[in-house]
Amino acid sequence: QVQLVESGGGLVQAGGSLRLSCAASGRTFSSYVMGWFRQAPGKEREFVAAISWSGGSAFYADSVKGRFTISRDNAKNTVYLQMNSLKPEDTAVYYCAASGRIEIMVVVTTTDLSLYDYWGQGTQVTVSS
Image 1: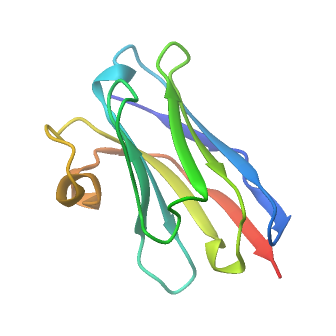
Image 2 (image 1 turned 60 degrees about the vertical axis):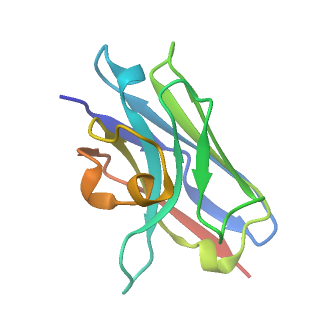
């Protein structure tokens, strides 16, 4: 069982930056692929970024590529999402998630919400224009 707690959300002006953190409980953090997803009002939850078990590989949605960076610290059981050059369309509730079922990190698996077993409660990010 893994419990995830996000933090770091808030209100920021367009062009600004935020760093989200997700702290995980348990002793097997490094055995999970970790992902960030977001959900805007009236829209479906969508993939943002994911990172491999050791942190050596990462995938990004096209909409955030070059602006967001995912990283993890397995010693601290924490995954991060550094968000730069924020846009109003980045406004959403951001969720971190853990997958123990992804065996190979390719686009089709890392972006599949159904393969993520554990989810945090979400943190609101609002970008004003």
